[in-house]
Length: 227
Image 1 (tube, helix red, strand yellow):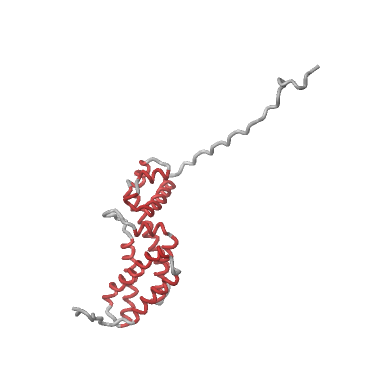
Image 2: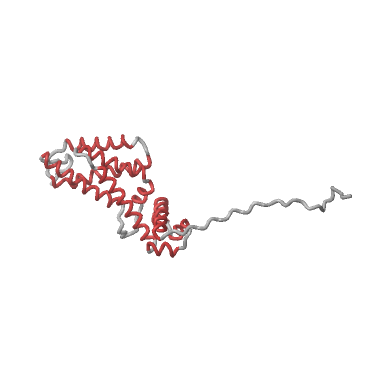
C-alpha cells in the first residue's frame, strides 16, 4: 500500500520567468553624436557659463570618452563656438522673418516681439548668448547679435528720417539706441516675466515711436553746449 503522504514523491517543477533580454545599444552615427554633444553643451553653457563647463562633464553626460568630444569640436572652445553660432543665426532668422510689415511702427513692434518670443521659447539659448564668452571667440555674443539687428533697423530709420526731413546720418545712432533699449528690457523681462510680453512690447514701442515722432531736427542740450 502506497503512502500518499510520502514527502519524497516528485513535486511539479515551477518554471521561473526568464529575465528580459537587454536590448542592444544603438550606436549613434557621427552626425547624431555631434547633435547630442551640441545639445548637452548648450545646456551646460547656459547653466554654468563657459569657464565652469568642462569637456569631462560634456563627455560624461553623453556617456562617451573625452576624445570623442575633441574629435568633433577640437575642445571646449570649438563646442562653445558652434553652440553660440547656432543661437546667433536662430535669433537673427527669427527677427528677419518677423519684419514683414510696411509701416515703421509695426516693424518696431515685430522686432520687439521677435526678441521677446525668443527669450521665452529658448531660455537656454538666450542664456548662452548673454553669458560671458571666451576671449577672442569667433562665434560672437549677444552684443554682436544686437549690433547686426541694429544695422537692419538703421536702414528702416534712414528712410524714415529722409521722409521727415531729418539728417539720415544719425540713423545709426538712433538704431543702436532703440535696439539697446529693447535688448536691456528683454534681459530684465527674462527674470521678471511680468507684465506679459505683449504689454512689454507695447510700452517699448510707445516710448520708441512717440519719441521718434517728435524728434527735433537739431537737438541741443540744456546744461551743456553741443559742438
